Length: 318
Ligand SMILES: O=C(O)CCC(=O)C(=O)O
Ligand SMILES: [Fe+2]
Image 1 (cartoon, protein in one colour):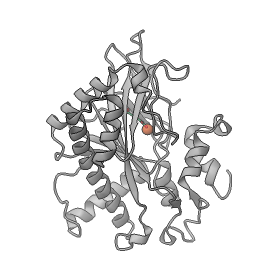
Image 2 (tube, rainbow, N blue to C red):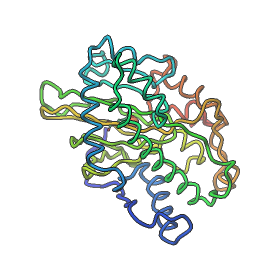
Image 3 (spheres, helix red, strand yellow):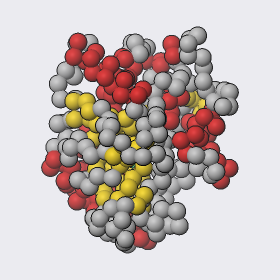
């Protein structure tokens, strides 16, 4: 792993100029595209999500993590990367996480809550659903900016349809107190993610030059990260940022991620406008589910996580 750098990821303010078609919107689109192409991520300054909603959400997440493990195991699904990961495993002893499928839909959150709390948990459902609706709106807006930035905003057929997968993470403080990698370095396997942390930083991003940047977003900010599917859709223009989480000290860390997941059956394919002489088609078309299944399979275990897309879908292997 390279050395740590003084570099910072771009910080983009989403508090004004949000009207599509205005000069302000166009300049935001340009900055979003540049950030996604050069860093594969940016800090999102966004004041629509109140600190009260964030605090409530994290207090409910703590309540969720404190449930008995037998209950938490009920968050089981055959869909890869959608269910519960128990802490104490051989590879990631300090990592625990849950998945709530289609979490901007109140019935999905309710089904999850009914599994965790047999008498239901209305406050959990309302709070998580409210936050996820906000994050979905933000994710759609960034998606639209990306389309507009490539001049594709008026071509709805080029757009992928997504739902929101909420992943909730808890990282235990390593007992030594020494800086420890508590997640596995990876690129996200879906289209994109919006991450939200609860005061304790730890996220690190690798630059294209192999330097690692520690992210210390402002407490009210979010982080947008490009995933592998956006790299494929954009014919390699957008960079899926490799990232990890490192923790030191004695405080556990909580975070959540709203992942934009294509609807079932989506074929990932670069729009024809993304392919030209300077940008020959890099990837074959593929069903995103087949790729995700490959990415979590035994067969791809030895392949660096950030190279799996290329190994799976590149038309010419490097
Ligand atoms: O906890 C974080 O900040 C990052 C989580 C993450 O990268 C993931 O769940 O894919
Ligand atoms: Fe990630």
